[in-house]
Image 1 (tube, rainbow, N blue to C red):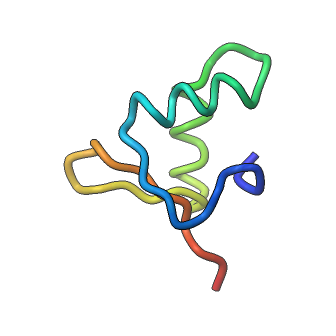
Image 2 (image 1 turned 45 degrees about the horizontal axis):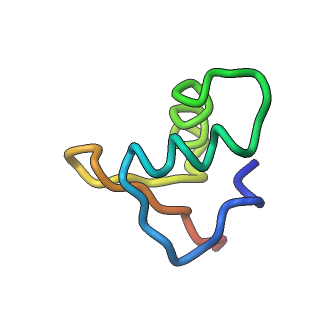
Amino acid sequence: MAARLPSGVEWSERELNELLKALHTFGDWALLRRDLYDARLLDRSLDGRRYWKVPKA
């Protein structure tokens, strides 16, 4: 899933939710967003309002 997200882009939580909704079919984009963050594939601002893809090391 993370491979399908563009690099170098920041999203609001709402924007990321809409993007994730379009990329999967199981209906729980919030779970997917949290799992991507927990797996360190996405990072977010301290207030949780902005998200971005973590660059590969």
